Image (tube, rainbow, N blue to C red; front, top):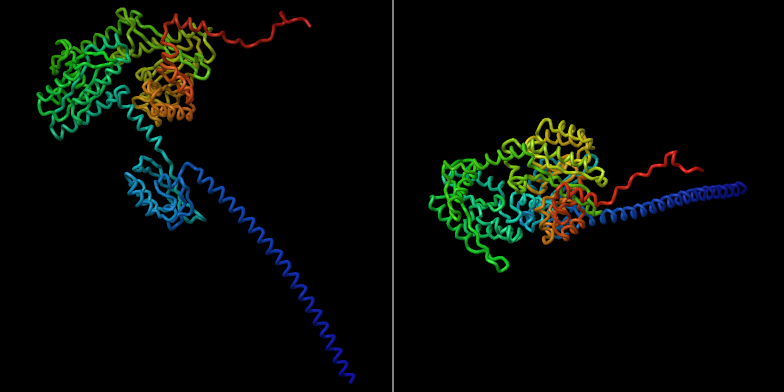
Length: 627
């Protein structure tokens, strides 16, 4: 019995021990589960916080994407979109729904319908297929007129290509500005006809076609009879309107395949291609004479003029554009001598033009020896303060009891090598006058002098300028040299290096007549210059043409981006002044402010300016008050 009880007691003790162990095990498990629950709860909290952060980051990224003016499209490695913005759909002229489900192939098919040429985009896709790590770029022009630059970059993760990023940049406005610049570079701003540069190019191409097709060409040189009288009696505005109507009548007379150009002033050129006979040229010339002798009506007033036409044939009379123009010019002067209002064909014995040119060159040489040249000065106005900030020195020739403008003799001086002594005379005279004016000049005054391309190329130019400045004890920063972009065309690297040398000695440099000839932003960004002068042909239209105003504003913005100042020339109205001020132009010159002045009148103008403030200096010991 004792043994039985002992066994029962032992069993209870074992049970108690097992329960105690079980309780301990349950307690440990409970603590472990509680700890793990706390850890899990902490992880869930962190996960929720990370999720919120990711949502915030995604919201920021999405807002940034949607705010961008560029189209952005991220695609995975299979070519499907991951993320994109509304601008991408707009630039591709489609919807967000389409972009959201489109592959690169789908986009290519879309562009084949909506773009004028998809070769650039197709080339990008081919390049990516050949090398997934490549970065590509191309230009796409859509049928709606939008021009888009497309860039593509690989999206990498641990060195593996995980897709691509595409960006689309709208360059329509830039392309339109460049197109407008190119048009202005090769067209007359008044009549919108081709200018001499484009006309010469057309002759060159026509002569090349003759080599294949054996069709003769005819070149007509037209000079209006009596136009000077119209200008002198009715004014330049009437004269300009007359030139526009002359251009319109010429366009109606010739065939579409022929070319009409304004040569300058009241002179026009006509290129007739595929000429069958001299009789055909005579008929066209007579139609031109008939069209121009019909009265022009301006403000209910009849204006009657006529024309003299010189004709040369190619290749019979020559196969060089300059020679053909010269031949037609000679024939035109023969028509003038024959009583005007007629046409004359070129004959080899016509040397009138050559004699006239030689005579002019001799007169220029005598004019330099006899001190017949003078300088006039036209102020430049700071548009923000309204004060005189500088001036431009303008050469005039006092010849035969009249002042001859530079357009009538500079070309001849360049041809016979007299432009360098003429340019040196200008610089010396301007510096001498600048020294005399220094006590009267406002702070920061800069005098501009035009420098010809021929003079710029002289090896001793920098030495000459340094000696001239030293001679008149002038700081270099008060002199500005105005050059055209043509100075860098022949030897860009050498010319830009020389421009930098001029800047290094302290001279200001300006690009004159920007917007004509070879002007382009590509040249501008590489030239070490301080100022851009916008040609008057751009300024004349800003009062009534939003396109002209936008173009001028673009030039100003780009020049300021390149840290250059901008001067507008040819300002004739208050409206032009205000528009230029509104779009941030720095300086301006023109008849609205001041006409070119003689030395005496400019001196009087300077004398009327408020005196410069003298820097304050402390009293000397002799005059200091006693304490």
